Amino acid sequence: MSENLQAQVGVRAWWGRSFSGFPRPFWVLFAGTIVNRVGQFVQPFLSLYLVGGRGTSVATAGTLVSCFGAGLFVSPVLGGWLADRFGRRPTLIWGLLATAAGLAALGLARELWQIAVCAFLLGVAMDVYRPAISAAVAEIVEPADRPRAFGLIYWAVNLGVSVSGVLGGLLAERGWWLLFLLDAVTCVVFAVLVARGVPESRAPREEHDTSGYGEVLRDRLLLALGLLTLVGACVYIQAYVALPLAMRADGLSPARYGLAYAVNPVVIIAVQPFTFPQLRRLPPVPLYVGSILLLGAGFFLTGFAHSTLAYAGTIAVWSLGEIGVNSVAPTLINAISPDRLRGRYNGVIGLAYGGSAFIGPILGAYALQAGRWVVWGGALVASIACAGLAAALGPSLQRRMGQREGHSG
Image 1 (cartoon, rainbow, N blue to C red):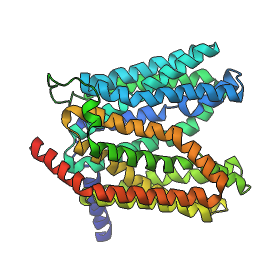
Image 2: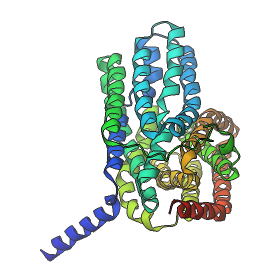
Image 3: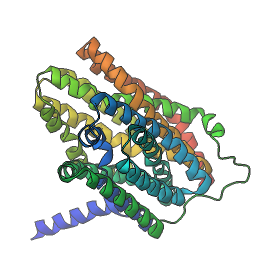
Image 4: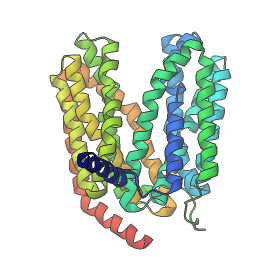
């Protein structure tokens, strides 16, 4: 009996350290993220829809998906500007509603030029809300709790995506229109949740602020973090580019790749909640550096893998690094940004992620073609370089964070 009581007390203490201390608007954003990601069907199934539902060739489908990607490249920059100019709350609401409208338009489009235009506009709308939600989380959560908050949001994303992948495949068999309809509905539901439960968190806008990106791009510390993000994201994207090709070269089927890759969301969903108490205690910069190194080490170990089980093991390693990076990186960005520029700071980082989606696949394909160890050794070297840059930026980051906290106080 006493052992059971001790276990209950231990669980309650862990729960309190992991999930307590957040205001209600944060939990609204958390719940909305899960709903939205559970219903994110169109993006992962877009190429299959174009070939199977619209009867396009594979090459044409690739071109149309590129139109969508071009829109995604613009989206975070626009979203950051809107979040600072008009506020976090309206940007979240209208960005999500615009995404719902874009999904409806793409689902109804029939001519190729209509599909291309709608795909681009959907891409522009789809990530408008991201800088706003990042800025809002930073502003409604206490600085000491931000790593946990961003870790929870990332956990919600993975929980939703793990469900949407399976559910989307089942829905597609019953009709492609269901993907567009339900994806749009979840965007509207998220917008309604924000409208009813998330107050505006942006500081009053200063009259001299032109809402442009000039002042933001003069911040060398932000640009350094943007470069770090770009290189690190190019490493991470090899999970979708070089990894399946490497497994194919080892004679492993796409189904085997899917089985091995499933380790990633499983590790994140199962492990990340147990990291939240540590995120509250550990200093962010050393944790960021260590997470980058762990991510690179995991990809480097891929060079030794030749079986599904071995590949799954390497994925488990870099997934642990991914947990740390995605909990700490947004914390650092929002900690160094002035309140009135926070949306645009997140927009620059979003642009870096968008750039990796263009650069990473090209680099990965050519590196793998040059040799197995070129890509995986290159991933380690790039990660070490990123970790070194993050460590070198440590004093500047600490100084800026101290200044921001003093200014806020």
